[in-house]
Length: 283
Ligand code: 13P
Image 1 (cartoon, protein in one colour):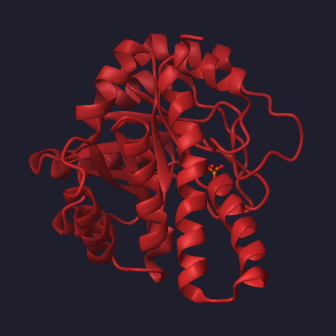
Image 2: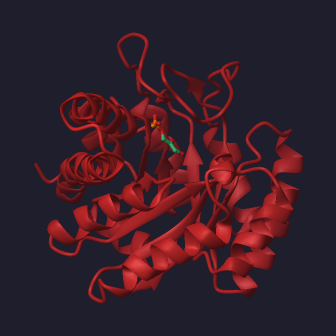
Image 3: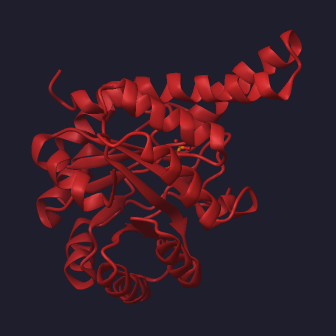
């Protein structure tokens, strides 16, 4: 069953668990992501397609692939989400294509402009029943990342600004910068759950953690306790699938085998995350 973020995240926020948002770029990756949700007892799942991957497929292709797989899973909540998009016209195309949720990434803009442009997207999306995620602050780039830019600097989200941002834009979920990185960490992760706790006290809406890959379990539990309800994972899934595929290509060099191997490996990695996110901070 296709939904938007609000249908999933409010419950997660209240009950202190997180919904995984996993990036796909092909039939195999989306199928692996959704199958993992089914195997985890029809866990709600966010199938994310980043604007960065428009060279892999169009928005309509992404929507059709995910929606047709979702038809086979009537008891599973699935949100088709546009990840990291700076372009208003691409966001409108995603809404037209049927996406239930979009992320406007104005994190590199001055605060006032980020507010103004996010609000405009919220007005358009909400009129169509589509939820909006926005970002305040900036994540650093780690290793093997496809997100953001290599030059991205770490700028923590300011809690008071976050309050003003949420009030002025009416955004449904806010991505925060608290020390996670896009990609794998170059050193020991230093995640500022103290800043997260302040943000959570100020805004009271579901918060989003980008850069889930490689973040220690204890840190993730502390984040979920402090308002994180959606966790994005991309790099680690891709790295695991590439490793499986590299082994298989030597053993059985046929594309159909490779395609199946990728799907299974994505499913396995995503399943591990879903189980852990569902436990939330209850362990
Ligand atoms: P990672 O690639 O670090 O898991 O981050 C994913 C992400 O934040 C997608 O928006």
